[in-house]
Length: 226
Image (cartoon, rainbow, N blue to C red; front, side, top):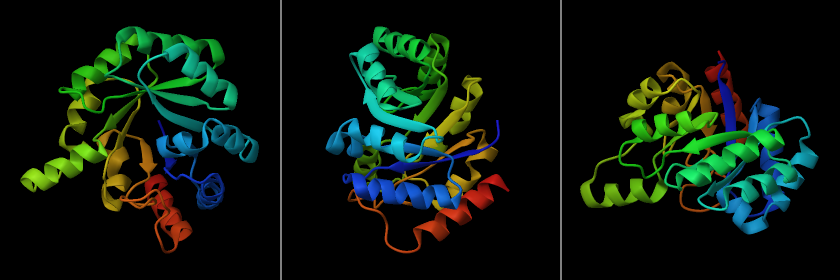
């Protein structure tokens, strides 16, 4: 598939999120993500507001579903989401329930492999269950904790190749990537590129990074899409 650029709106203020989304769309970003912090702070009203403001853009609701899969996915779909996220660490029945809701309500399901011991195996398992995309995810606390304890930098690149080989559906790699690493993701077989922390969102607060965000996003999208 052709590369797709997604911005992760990991903010806690709805107006900030909408303003940031406008900047991103003007810069050429394809998908908008209502990040977990935004949903926690504003509820699914943030998805409704993004849908009203951007009627033609895909919207990912990153609630990281762990239980109550059908009802949560139904709520997100009815709020205007086109994509929802379920965790590989959830029970198999939860993943199946989210997938069923996805089919019933015409939305797509992203399976997130964060915190799995073998992320390639977990990704293949989720594909077999029926998810539409894999989110290959190295978590924020995991990265920080390992860095403090060992000085080692963890990255989705560490096992991305194994995940890409394991599945046939599109892969998205997230978790502390640098600008250059994010731009190179399609070349590694991960065409869904997320721009979030620390590139667009401050890694240690739910705020937009200072500086020329639009210029940064324009440069990133230009280089990703060639």
